[in-house]
Amino acid sequence: MISIQDATIIELPKILDARGNLSFAEQNNQIPFEIKRTYWIYDVPGGEARGGHAYRKNEEFIIALSGAFDVIVDDGTNKKTFTLSRSYYGLYVPAGLWREMVNFSTNSLALEFGSMPYAPADYIREYDEFIKLKHNGSL
Image (tube, rainbow, N blue to C red; front, side, top):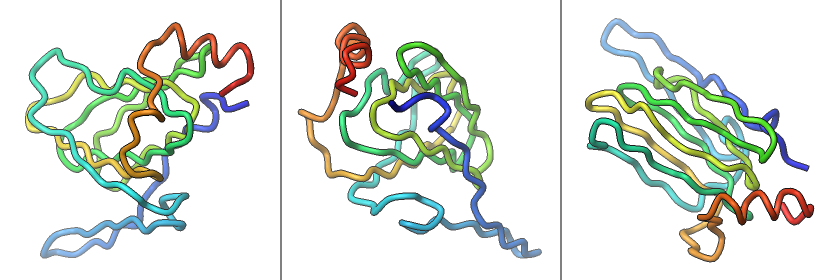
C-alpha cells in the first residue's frame, strides 16, 4: 500500500555558472516516470489552496520554480508537509496519495509533471471517498 514514505524530495542537478545557474529534470531519470502532461500554477491569491485531491493512477513531480509553497501529502493515516522553495528540488508524489498545496508566497510558480494526460475519472475529489478507498485496499 502506498504511504507518505513513498513521496520523496529529489535533488535535481545544478550547474553553477557566474552567468546564472541551470538545473534540469529528465523523464525516467530524475522524474521517475514518462511525462505525459506538464502544467504550472501561478498567481495564487493569498490564503488560497490548490490540489485537494488524489489520483488513482497519475503520478506527479512538482517543482517550485519561483517563490515557495507547502505540499501536504496524506496517505489516509498520516500526513507530511514538504516545503518547496528551491528550483533544484522536486517532490515526487505517487498515485494513491491525497495532496494539497498551501502557503503560496507572492509570485510563486509551481511546475508540475504528470504521468498521464488530464483524465477527470482519475481524480478522487472527495476526502471521504479517498479514505474509504484507502481503508478497503482499493488505493
